[in-house]
Length: 330
Image 1: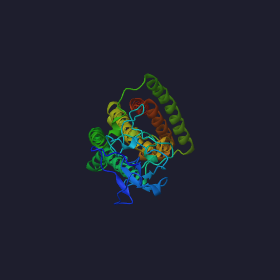
Image 2 (image 1 turned 135 degrees about the vertical axis):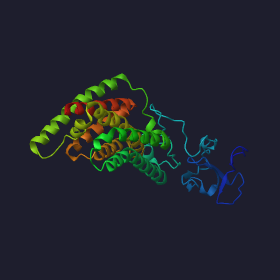
Image 3 (image 1 turned 45 degrees about the vertical axis):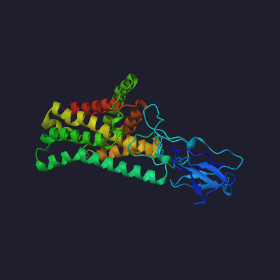
Image 4 (image 1 turned 180 degrees about the vertical axis):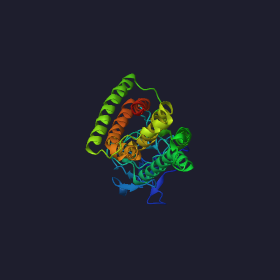
């Protein structure tokens, strides 16, 4: 039986198209993807048809009442934004493994694994935006360093690093603010237990890193794992701390644990997203000799970010780790 007409809702679509049915001939159905209403000939009761939004519409059997929930107008039929997790990330309804046929917006922060359940079009849009935002962040972070190296012709490059770091910070801030809310969600207060954990983890990471560098020096004396020495000697401890500890602690955590991890966890799920973020973090440091250390620290920082819901503990650990290496090189 067809539903009574509601002037606030669009007219029902019919299948076969262009047909007008009597109450005895029609079965009412509704699309869970876009909320569109359908009047379907009763010969198709119990079957499925493809809606214009690309979702499948289940036509109820004649003995089953038509669904009513999807007939109500929604605030945003493309993607409901009312369900959020404890970190403020948008969750989508549906069982695990069920494909989401709604259009998932790229300008909102989604819960881990949400886009993994999306259709191909939504996944492609999210992948493209993730790559573009990450490339924009890389350009903002590295272009001042490249420009400083070019202007100095490679000579006395270290003296220009403080100015390049300030420029990188300004450019990264512009990218984060203008791109999406994903990179800004981590600027919230962290539980004290995670701050204390970051302090303890710093000590463990330093012990592992120093042990790894000692092993490298013993096994391959020609490999230089002390990447900060020249900067510290030319700039002095305070300026070196700003360039090597303060700037990376803020910018790299926003870039990797903020924007990139937020995107990849929604797109790939918790495990694969965190591993991919840590791999990108390690590779972008461009130090093959200590790549395992950077990868391990990247995994832990990502895990800490997810549990604390904040970027601050990771920034603290990042600063203390790099800062201690600077002081050891002094």
